[in-house]
Image (tube, rainbow, N blue to C red; front, side, top):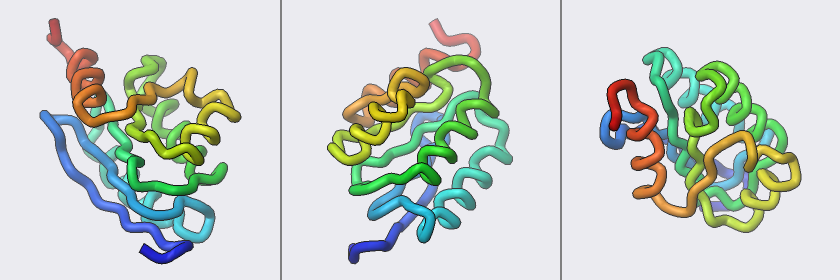
Length: 123
């Protein structure tokens, strides 16, 4: 992937929608990310996972989509899970305090467990 590009696609893991992205998430690439997130939100999910393991950069516009999704889904921190170990993404989440507002995990198994534990009727 070249600098300044972003690839976005949607998957479902154990019934939870997942927005996956690869590349740089900034104002120039935001439309793809916003479109995918809007498509997922039209399904009225109880939780959304953002797999950003392959995102090497995120700016305030990308962080804004994460925050807007959390606000739309409700007050549970685990309503929005972000999967990443990328230093630049972790730094942006930490600097803005979003790491305390969103559930940030390093791997998909932790994300799926978090999402399923918040599902209605989960034990």
